[in-house]
Length: 312
Image (cartoon, rainbow, N blue to C red; front, side, top):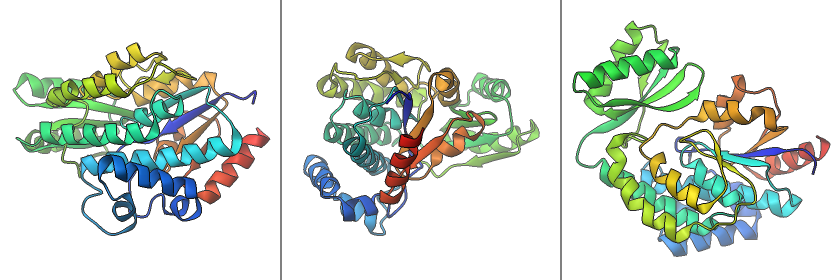
């Protein structure tokens, strides 16, 4: 097609019990994906996603579950349309979904990879109480200055997710984050809220996880990109295995420049398709773009998105 589409993939926090069930019940292809992913990881994804449990909130399970549902949505769309992206992007974990979409990762390899990624992250954070906090209503500069001041005092807090204008997530040691809540509010934050997270993503506390992930990336990545991927680390595109190997370990210890990435690509694309549960990125993108934004999270949204894309 002549229109340039950006394929988007959500990250951790978009999960919920029941996601992917409509795909699973109505598509043999998706049931095969679930079976193959279980065979590779040992995770019973049917039970994890469709039955009440405490595992879905644990990083080592959350990440492969989100990626599997997003990969299923992407596979169904591509099989139905033959449409390839003009560019791809993901939020944190979602960057691995973007790599699947361009052919640089096999879907089942990616499920295994992010299962390991989640385990490495959890193990890196296991020796000390850590967490994450969202700040709403302050500028990037204000949050960065506050965090730097705290680090100068020996605290461990870092801005790690630049999600949207006035929305930044901070990671670090939990007690330091708790002390930061009042500091942010006194500086004018509309809200400063600790998140239900047991890891401290995208900060130096995850260096050991980055080191452990690197050899698995070397093993599983292919040098066969059909479209560029936008790096969370740089907000710039890359399209080779060598570039990916340099960027993806850094992604664990560097901030996610999501809003910068949106600003970098918006002039280039005609519409966005978000694959997976939740419409999370559509919410973040509300102020970042006026372009059409579609989400594929079940069979009905798959059909409506296919119709809408044909009408562009």
